[in-house]
Image 1 (tube, rainbow, N blue to C red):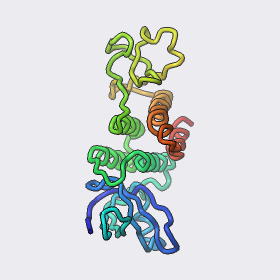
Image 2 (cartoon, helix red, strand yellow; image 1 turned 180 degrees about the vertical axis):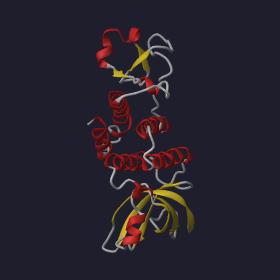
Image 3 (cartoon, one colour; image 1 turned 90 degrees about the vertical axis):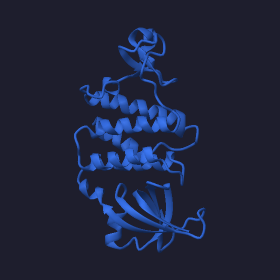
Image 4 (cartoon, rainbow, N blue to C red; image 1 turned 30 degrees about the vertical axis):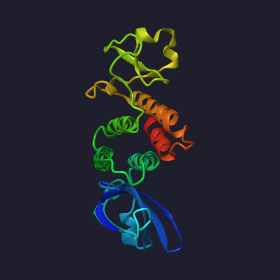
Length: 240
């Protein structure tokens, strides 16, 4: 069995002395693994850095087998940010979260397109890429079945003056609805409701803490998975 398609590299790990397991997020086949040889070649090593856009050729006796990859570069996005530590943390966080949340060999065109677009923004160092990253996490939470509801107050049903998020329900809450419990709620940055709103570093920290909580509570902890270290590194870099 064979297939060819586009995707971007998620990571790789050693299999034996001459082979590595390459993991990619592909447009048509979702998160997919395969053996790759010749990784010690300088040219190939540069191609399979996380975030790089590639053409993948996979072959195996059966679809269920690990199979083998050959890889050709499309765009080496990682080379744009070698000296930008925070951007590298962003790319690594995207790839680590996809590896742990996306089902293997299941196409997900929505997350694929969102992820590739974000990778390009990060590697081009576009303004507001960190804000775009946070919305990517919110979209991913929704896609895996744990979306936040920031449209109206969970207590009063009001749609204005939403200032908090319940850590249990993931629903927005107004100041009035929060009452004496406001110290137990997450702060809701205004830019998560109105994307054109201005924001500061505190808003970014609050937004990252919010999505982290629900990733941990609703996905990582129930599945006995460790929260990605690369995501922790990204948050620390942002709030410094």
